[in-house]
Length: 283
Ligand SMILES: [Mn+2]
Image (cartoon, rainbow, N blue to C red; front, side):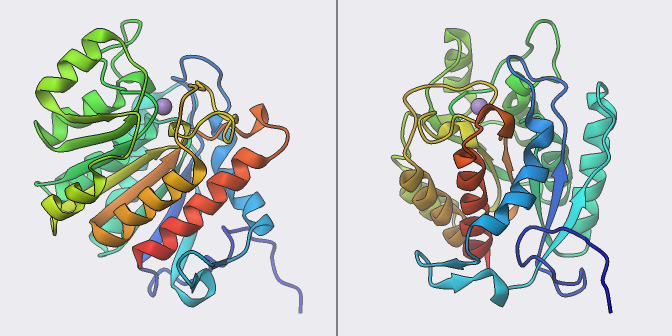
């Protein structure tokens, strides 16, 4: 008997009823400030996942042994961030309401705001752990508030002071860092302090947002705003595993892969491997 060709992230074939984590893609890049292309990120990650193993030698766990569902990509309207965000919010809210964990794959970083809106409504004491090269704390960029350059400022409006914890940040304007010093916690350049944060947040509900451009462009050139001086793949893998295994991550996302800027495919492979490690650590 022949079966329909329905592509999912490798081994993420659980039924919705049994899945604890539910993947969905948001192929949206309308506010990207420099080089667009992240709309192709989620599909590339899904397709290229078959190039890496389901088994993790780091964690001695296998995706075949856990229940994850891949619910596919949303069909988002390009050029309308408000409508796109409301569709992302609705999908995340549905998954959260069913007692499951949404795992969003971008798309540009603005997509995070949709999922954070849903998570903050369900968990009023929500904390956000944010890995990125960029502070993303501007109030507006070129006169626009719904921009990927402003996404963490928009999230701050939902979760408040002291609830955003940034790591790896190495780019922004002076005013962003000054504003951030009063409202969020920012660890520049590294993941120093992450282990202490896992203890401080203990059982607090956490939204984990991972902008892959926190990686050095030498290992992750496939992104719209590459920023030299980033962390190594292994440092990111260890840090993301720590967050997902030690914190109470109620929702998360991986964003800003722009696969066409890296014809070697290494960036997409790195993204696939990080998603695998996160899925395994979340269980
Ligand atoms: Mn970034």
